[in-house]
Image 1 (cartoon, rainbow, N blue to C red):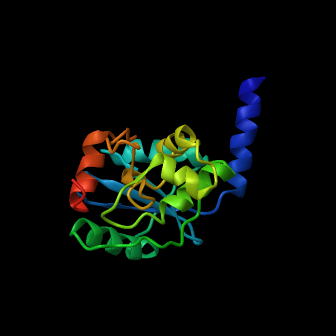
Image 2 (cartoon, rainbow, N blue to C red):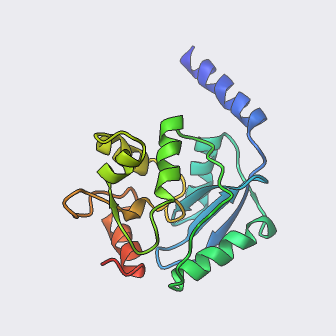
Length: 182
C-alpha cells in the first residue's frame, strides 16, 4: 500500500514539475552539476559522475533533466568567474523546488551574507527574528539544494569554528579559502 502511495506522489510530481535542463561545470571542487528550469536555477550538485547526479536529480524531482547548454550558459559563466576569484554576488533567478517555507526563508537569508565574510548560525536565526534557531539553521544549511550559490559555507558556529558542511569540511575550507576567509 505504501509503495502505491509513493508511486502516485512521484507520478504527480512528474506531471507538475517544470521541464529541467542541466550542464556540468568544472571547478576546483570537482564536477558541479547545475539544474534549472525556465524560471531559474534549482540545484547544484557536487557529484563525481553524471550517472550519480542524474539518479539524485530523479530521486528529488521524479524526472531526469535534459542536457542543454544554452539555458545554463549564464550560470556557467558566473561559476567560472567565482572560481577564478572574482567577488560574485549570486542574485538569481533561483527557484526552490524543495524545502519547507522556513528552510526557503533561511536559504534566502543566506544570500545576504557577502562574499568573503562569515556569519553565525545564530546570526541567521536573528535575521528571521528567531534568536535560538541555530539548530534549525544548521539543518536547513544541510539540505541546501544550491551549495556555493546559496552560501551555506559562509555560516559558522558562534565561536568561529567551522561547524559542518554537507559536502564535507574540506569543501567548506576550499570555498572559504577562495573567498579569503581562511
